[in-house]
Image (cartoon, rainbow, N blue to C red; front, top):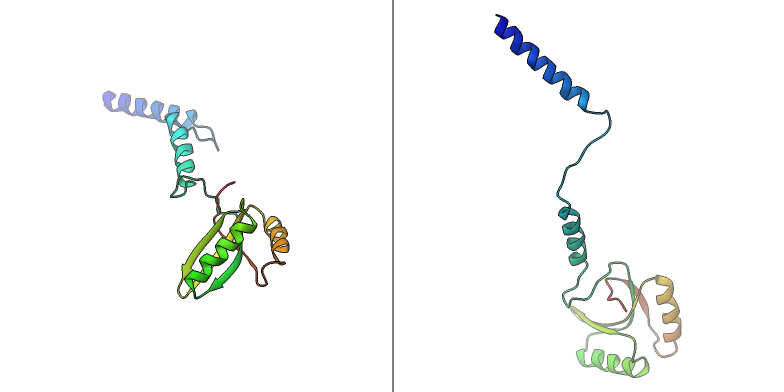
Length: 135
Protein backbone atom coordinates (compact mmCIF):
# COMPACT_ATOMS: atom_id res chain seq x y z
CA UNK A 1 0.00 0.00 0.00
CA UNK A 2 2.80 2.34 0.88
CA UNK A 3 4.41 1.48 -2.43
CA UNK A 4 1.25 2.47 -4.38
CA UNK A 5 1.04 5.68 -2.41
CA UNK A 6 4.71 6.45 -3.14
CA UNK A 7 4.25 5.78 -6.86
CA UNK A 8 1.09 7.93 -6.92
CA UNK A 9 2.91 10.73 -5.12
CA UNK A 10 5.82 10.50 -7.59
CA UNK A 11 3.50 10.70 -10.66
CA UNK A 12 1.55 13.58 -9.11
CA UNK A 13 4.81 15.46 -8.45
CA UNK A 14 6.00 14.75 -12.03
CA UNK A 15 2.67 15.92 -13.52
CA UNK A 16 2.78 19.15 -11.50
CA UNK A 17 6.32 19.82 -12.76
CA UNK A 18 5.30 19.29 -16.42
CA UNK A 19 2.23 21.51 -16.12
CA UNK A 20 4.09 24.29 -14.32
CA UNK A 21 6.97 24.22 -16.89
CA UNK A 22 4.60 25.28 -19.67
CA UNK A 23 3.71 28.94 -20.06
CA UNK A 24 0.28 29.81 -21.30
CA UNK A 25 0.24 31.03 -24.92
CA UNK A 26 3.91 30.27 -25.68
CA UNK A 27 5.31 27.49 -27.81
CA UNK A 28 8.96 26.51 -27.78
CA UNK A 29 10.16 25.18 -31.13
CA UNK A 30 13.36 23.19 -31.16
CA UNK A 31 14.76 22.61 -34.65
CA UNK A 32 18.00 22.17 -36.51
CA UNK A 33 19.38 25.56 -37.72
CA UNK A 34 19.89 24.09 -41.19
CA UNK A 35 16.11 23.89 -41.66
CA UNK A 36 15.94 27.66 -42.25
CA UNK A 37 18.70 27.50 -44.86
CA UNK A 38 16.94 24.60 -46.60
CA UNK A 39 13.66 26.56 -46.67
CA UNK A 40 15.46 29.58 -48.15
CA UNK A 41 17.13 27.38 -50.79
CA UNK A 42 13.78 25.79 -51.70
CA UNK A 43 12.16 29.21 -52.14
CA UNK A 44 15.04 30.29 -54.38
CA UNK A 45 14.71 27.14 -56.50
CA UNK A 46 10.95 27.57 -56.81
CA UNK A 47 11.55 31.01 -58.32
CA UNK A 48 13.90 29.57 -60.95
CA UNK A 49 12.67 29.13 -64.50
CA UNK A 50 13.52 26.22 -66.78
CA UNK A 51 16.41 28.22 -68.27
CA UNK A 52 17.86 28.99 -64.85
CA UNK A 53 16.65 32.59 -64.86
CA UNK A 54 14.62 33.86 -61.97
CA UNK A 55 10.95 34.10 -62.87
CA UNK A 56 8.52 36.43 -61.15
CA UNK A 57 4.81 35.80 -61.24
CA UNK A 58 4.08 39.51 -61.03
CA UNK A 59 4.79 41.03 -64.41
CA UNK A 60 3.36 42.28 -67.67
CA UNK A 61 4.01 41.98 -71.40
CA UNK A 62 2.62 43.86 -74.38
CA UNK A 63 1.11 41.76 -77.16
CA UNK A 64 1.96 43.21 -80.58
CA UNK A 65 0.63 40.42 -82.80
CA UNK A 66 -1.94 37.65 -82.79
CA UNK A 67 -2.75 35.66 -85.90
CA UNK A 68 -3.05 32.32 -87.64
CA UNK A 69 0.16 32.48 -89.71
CA UNK A 70 3.40 31.32 -88.14
CA UNK A 71 5.54 33.10 -90.73
CA UNK A 72 3.75 36.37 -90.07
CA UNK A 73 4.40 36.04 -86.32
CA UNK A 74 8.12 35.56 -86.94
CA UNK A 75 8.12 38.46 -89.41
CA UNK A 76 6.53 40.73 -86.76
CA UNK A 77 9.09 39.57 -84.22
CA UNK A 78 11.95 40.40 -86.64
CA UNK A 79 10.43 43.81 -87.42
CA UNK A 80 10.06 44.57 -83.71
CA UNK A 81 13.65 43.49 -82.92
CA UNK A 82 14.93 45.87 -85.59
CA UNK A 83 13.06 48.76 -83.95
CA UNK A 84 13.74 47.78 -80.31
CA UNK A 85 16.85 45.54 -80.12
CA UNK A 86 17.12 45.70 -76.31
CA UNK A 87 13.53 44.55 -75.59
CA UNK A 88 12.97 40.81 -75.30
CA UNK A 89 10.36 39.17 -77.53
CA UNK A 90 8.36 35.97 -77.00
CA UNK A 91 6.35 33.91 -79.48
CA UNK A 92 3.70 31.54 -78.18
CA UNK A 93 1.14 29.33 -79.85
CA UNK A 94 -2.29 28.56 -78.50
CA UNK A 95 -4.40 26.85 -81.11
CA UNK A 96 -5.19 28.36 -83.55
CA UNK A 97 -3.23 31.60 -82.94
CA UNK A 98 0.40 32.63 -82.77
CA UNK A 99 1.12 35.51 -80.41
CA UNK A 100 4.09 37.85 -80.17
CA UNK A 101 4.51 39.49 -76.78
CA UNK A 102 7.28 41.86 -75.83
CA UNK A 103 8.95 43.18 -72.71
CA UNK A 104 9.36 42.14 -69.12
CA UNK A 105 7.63 44.88 -67.16
CA UNK A 106 7.32 44.69 -63.39
CA UNK A 107 4.38 47.10 -63.22
CA UNK A 108 1.38 47.70 -65.41
CA UNK A 109 2.34 51.38 -65.56
CA UNK A 110 5.68 50.52 -67.21
CA UNK A 111 3.86 48.34 -69.75
CA UNK A 112 1.30 51.08 -70.40
CA UNK A 113 4.06 53.63 -71.10
CA UNK A 114 5.71 51.26 -73.56
CA UNK A 115 2.35 50.49 -75.18
CA UNK A 116 1.83 54.22 -75.76
CA UNK A 117 5.22 54.37 -77.48
CA UNK A 118 4.37 51.35 -79.66
CA UNK A 119 1.01 52.70 -80.87
CA UNK A 120 2.79 54.50 -83.72
CA UNK A 121 3.97 51.22 -85.27
CA UNK A 122 1.29 48.76 -84.12
CA UNK A 123 -2.47 49.38 -84.37
CA UNK A 124 -3.71 46.64 -82.04
CA UNK A 125 -1.94 46.27 -78.68
CA UNK A 126 -2.88 44.59 -75.42
CA UNK A 127 -1.24 44.22 -72.01
CA UNK A 128 -1.15 40.77 -70.41
CA UNK A 129 -0.16 39.77 -66.90
CA UNK A 130 2.14 36.77 -66.92
CA UNK A 131 5.43 35.42 -65.64
CA UNK A 132 8.37 37.54 -66.71
CA UNK A 133 12.15 37.19 -66.85
CA UNK A 134 14.25 39.72 -64.94
CA UNK A 135 16.27 42.33 -66.72
